[in-house]
Length: 143
Image (cartoon, rainbow, N blue to C red; front, side, top):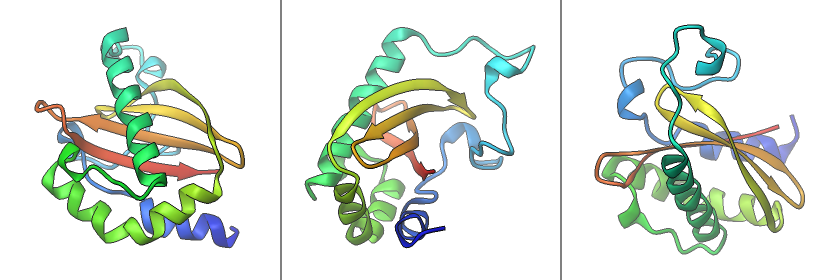
């Protein structure tokens, strides 16, 4: 694992647990399967829900890259965790280059999963919004 990946892993592994997953494990590509892979899975989120999460994610990434994080848009717990990691988050995201695309790819344990392509990296983000519309869960994975 290169130094860049180690920095991101230490800064952004898990920032807060979504309400749906607080009693269970965090989303994991290797430990959990997408609902579409489970024969009895509930239907996925509707297009409006996906679009709302995508807008919030795009704004959050832009804010983080600009070092102008909107903590009011986050749950209290998440805001505290992001504040503690901000010194690593901003430079790491800045090295990835310009945001090129954000694509919804599924849902895991109540969080929506997006593939986010930058000029220098492709990442996976998990985001969950609480009933109040604030970000309750945010995870970034590289590689």
